[in-house]
Image (tube, rainbow, N blue to C red; front, side, top):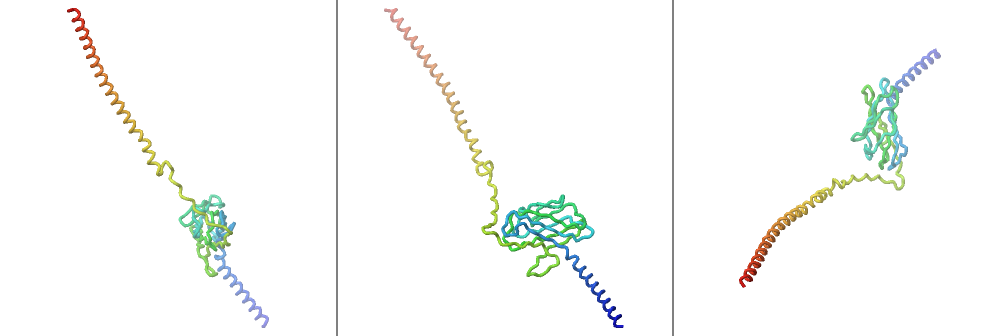
Length: 247
């Protein structure tokens, strides 16, 4: 009896253990999938850093087709460029981050890609909240940021940063382009320089017309004076001959 009872107890214990393992496995299944990020130079204020992301596939019927990432404070969307990604996947900037996606990956294939960041901010850690979209429309949200060491169900990819290197400084944004000389404040000066000769030209034209008119008047006066002188000379000559003939 004791042997049979012992075997029965062991059998029951084995069944209970197996059942517990099944429950634990089922509970751990969804949580096993996650999103991660690593960096080529995980230091605050590091420049031209490559960030590599991995989003594990968790669907048994659809592949990942799109990833939506919200960038942490201090990284602007235009400071991120794709470096490596699945074939035909493209990166598009959004107001608060970017999306990267394309043809859906094969079922069970993790989404792996990397981007280059101009400079990391001066922080101790960076969280990259990520939304995974599958070809069947399902969305997995890895957006929770753990605080005080607590565990969360859907943790966002978090990158821990080391202290900045000695002498490292934030990159100063490039100044806005200055107006070109053709369209800036110098533009108004171009118009007067073109029109300025107009007045002298007009004055010269007026002077030429005036000179022409004066020349005509002077010629008329000279002609009249010449005629008078000729008449006077002729009269004098006639008067002298007349007096001689009478003498």
